[in-house]
Image (cartoon, rainbow, N blue to C red; front, side, top):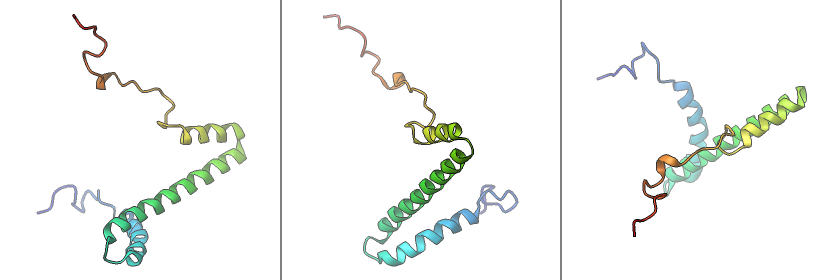
Length: 105
């Protein structure tokens, strides 16, 4: 049975995306062998794709900085800053309801 997510009419599944991951994962799995192969393939694929992502972001920052140094510095800060958006995050919903209330004793 085919659901609408997998239907070729809507084309929500991109095999190009899967194919690019396959090109990275297949050589890693061939090098890893059978013992621990899936875990090594998973971690190796994440490391390879993370390295490619970091390299492309570094190249983007360098090119933007070449055109406009201030914009390059701002882009670098936005990409490096924890939380990505430079906004403080409140943890109020996760705090205990009685944390700030003094005890009756």
